[in-house]
Image 1 (cartoon, one colour):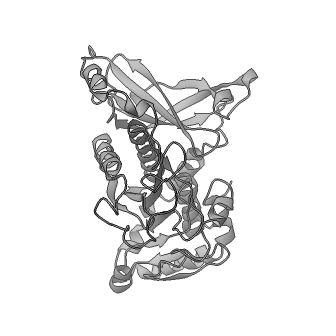
Image 2 (cartoon, rainbow, N blue to C red):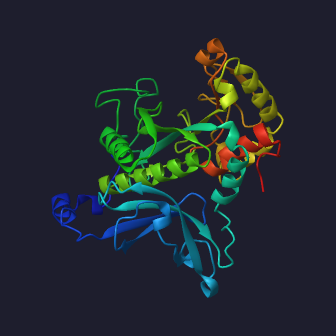
Length: 369
C-alpha cells in the first residue's frame, strides 16, 4: 500500500478551530505562479486591508526566482502580475487565490511564462469566440511514488473494471476526487465533470467550456487546487504521461476545440478545415504538447492504450486511437467541436491552446515563438 505523508496525519480538527477565527476585515490573498520547470506551481500569501473586488484591486508582488529555477541569486527578484482571481476553498471567504504571470527584472515574460504570448493570440481571434475544454488525467501516488491503493508487492487486476468504476476493489481515492470537485466549484473554477480512468488510481476531471485565455487560467488553478487537496490527504497527484510502464494506460490532457462557425449549421466543414491544417503541423504541435518537447509524450503516444503513434497524424469519427477525434454526435449533427488527443497530462494549456489557434485560425507554424 502506498505511504501517505506525515503532515496528513496531523489533527485536522485543531486546524478547523483556527480556520473559524474572525479576520477583522482583513483578506488573505494567495499568489500562485508557474515555476521554472514549466510544470511546478508555487504560492505565497499576503494580507490585504480589504477584500478585493476585481483583479485590479490586487497589487503586483515579487519573489526570489533563484529558488524557483527562474533566476540567478545575484539578480533574483521577479515580478508577480495578477491575471485571474478565485475564491479560496481552503481558508474560505473573503480570502482569494490569484493566478499570476511572471516577469523578469526587465519586465519581460519569464521563459516559462506562456500566458503573455497566448493572450496575444487569443486577442487576435476574439471575434471567433474560440471555446476550449480540457480533460485533465492524473494518477494518485503515495509519497513513496507507489500508486495509491495498489498492492505493496505486485499489481492489481488488469485494466477493465476501473474506468468509471464503483466499489472498493475498483475505485481508489474517490474521497480526494470529490473534495477536489467541490473545492473547484467553490473557487469558481469552470470544472464540468470527473470520472475514474482506465488504470486503477488514475482519475480525470474536465474544465470548460472556457473562452480564449480563460482555458489556461482555469486549468492551472484547478491543478493547484488538486495538489493542495492531495497535500491534505498526504498523497501526490502525478501528471506524468506514463507513470507506470507496461500494459497500463498513460495520462493525457485531451483538448476540445470549437469556434462560433463550428458550432453553427454545417460547422463540420470548418472542423474539417481545421483538421486539415493540423495535419500539416503535426511535428510542431508534438513539440509544444509536453514541456520536454515531445520526450514525455513519446512514452505515452505509442499507438496502443487508446493513443495514436507520436509519429503519425490521424483523424476519425469516434476513434479514440486517432490524433483528432470527431465525436459521433458531431458527425451526425454536422456541427460542434473536435478533440485533439495528443496533449500530455503535464502539458502547459497556454502552449496547447495557442498552438491550436495559431495553426487553425492564424496560419502560424504551431504557435511557437
